[in-house]
Image 1 (cartoon, one colour):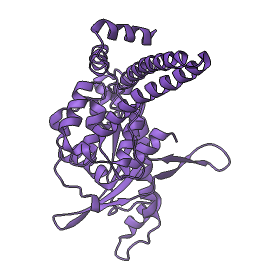
Image 2 (cartoon, rainbow, N blue to C red):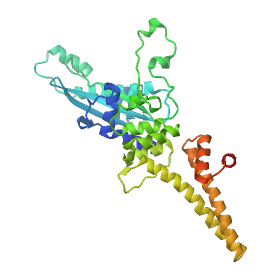
Image 3 (cartoon, rainbow, N blue to C red):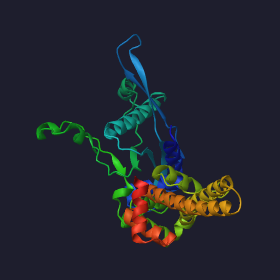
Image 4 (cartoon, helix red, strand yellow):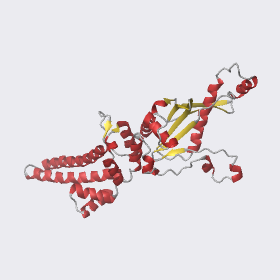
Length: 352
């Protein structure tokens, strides 16, 4: 399992994040599912399928990303739901089939649990025989299963959302007999500001950061204006760093991260590293050339090289942050007091 998979799984496993995602999906942000009502489930799903061979059956094992049971009271009755989340960094073009299999295995395992129970003395003989054949009695009930896909990628999701879409053109008369299965998807790239405001946990800040990672003006505005970005959980920052490729500075000794400060420090460090390296190089060159004027000229040359390296380092950093060339030119002119022509020249040289 890669770093992105591990960090997104850890992030979405948090009860408040998990509950927030399903409250958004099912209740449009209304607080119905409480984090304290969630029960962790084993994410390893095992099913037995029938196949040819000596044993006549084979096992299939699937591992879910996150799986929890929700237990709540409604109208004086306990309601049980099985809720699962699948994290996607990349588009999966067979997601409906994949999720359908996950849910089918979950239902099959529930049926097997009923097989092990002893029939109640009051059950009619016909019901007992039926339960013996199927492993599921007339009065037994399944816990509904809902699987939600969280897509963290920057490219808009263009994969099928249902089995029908995967099948292509199906005759209308035949379609009535083909069972469909639809996936539930959350992708920050297409969420509106109003929809994002329905989120109440740090899931909101994570989705905002991912949504605006290509629009740096909007991202800087959000980071500067939204006070909640001043105190982000370290795990959330680590997940965002892995997903977006942004070199967010994370102090391991701190539990909370100020995202705006962390990104600014990253940019400042890139500039400083370039200058330091250039000065050190210049001193070495000056010593090689001799003493007195040679050292002085070497240091001056090193400073110039350091500034140039700092400029190129800043350009590369801003490129990684998806700044446009116009935005980078503005930063260079402001930080290094360059003319428009000089800024353009540095950009062209760096790209070359």
